[in-house]
Length: 288
Length: 288
Image (cartoon, rainbow over the protein chains, first blue to last red):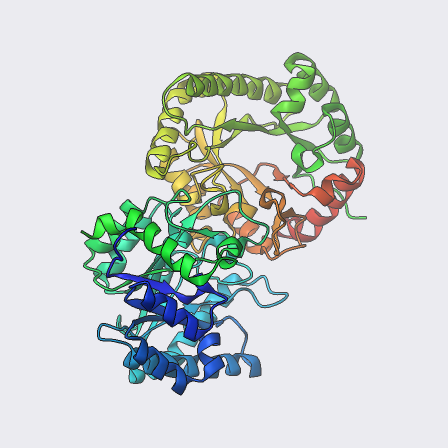
């Protein structure tokens, strides 16, 4: 068994079927020091209880997943989405305050896809920018960084019209780096011919709010959303990408976030153990 | 029924199960003036017979699909792939000479994915550049343009390490534009935040060897290779993209290339008719 890397954070999606209590317990019991949470399991117990549970766990809090869905046209549905993002910002601030020292108040944002029936991806992207303009002052007051997550272009139409790190940084450029940054997730951007150069730029601009890792492998499963793998089980060069991130001075925790039906079907403690091993083999060597 | 657009070309993959004779017949019978061919059905009858059949059809020849698969490391398999590309170049020249006036000698190249077990996408891309360097003089002598086709990033690992038009143009820049250009295929690049700017650049640099259209829709089918649709059945803005291509002065035919199991299951003449209608609704208005 490998030693647990002190910078490893388990994103709760990796153990999707664990409730909050279980997720915190298996993570801490394995000796992992940090966790990234999802809104649904937090809201299942309520924010007050969740913050107390997190504090009791002794874990650092790394990110809250997730806000966004900013591409709706003006109207009640968009207003409701923005209100929901304000709640997510509040949750993020509360959880970061409750986590152990070194916690980070980062809310990961998935921009949203094309509204039903729309072919206007340029307009959808403008609405993402507008939504950030609306939410940025609120996030700033709360001390929360909004992390724009570029998603793989196979999700451009139905989930996220922000597809590259370059694009995320262009959008973030209108805001202070402590208010709007980017999520650097290997799965989504490994293929980008500019990936190393854009990671360097993100670092220079102070925008790497979180670094998340998992692997890409083909053939893709029928539900491409679930095509994420343990590091080492696919084709991503974690040495090159992690080195690029670390070279920018990134000193935060590193989250493992995997959506994978096979992995989800296994006991949470087994998955945490496998995650520790995968991280030790692929990412840790670069951190030493 | 819509009039047949004089710039419409049927890529043979759209009627995949038609042999060469059938493909030529249903295309010409429908009043379409041009066709793009695939190597397998051409080689099924042999090049001499194929060129004669094409000449007899009266159709213009627009592209030959396809060469490439350039990412193999040095060795016998790579040498064989390069030899096969030389044959593909010869075929392209012969077919373009046999097609009606206005035919174009364009060989579409799919770069290839990561070799089995490799995580070195940077190295794979260098080998693509090397292969082009090897083949370019041969293509030039034959009067054939090699069209690098960026494929959607969901194919980066297993089919094509060239993922954006920008990247294809960067690679092509080492060569004369009449020898190495790019294939601009809406399905693969519609999501790119830089798509219009890169189409303009491709035009400025004289690199748009072929413009191919089909649509993107979700959910993706289990085999994502088959996720191409008639124009209008998905989310791509053909007005914006076609306008960008035409604004560069592109005056060649426009191919419809669709891989879709439902469409393939229908009679070829029906598919050609549906393609004519789809093209008339989505692309033709921009050409007037």
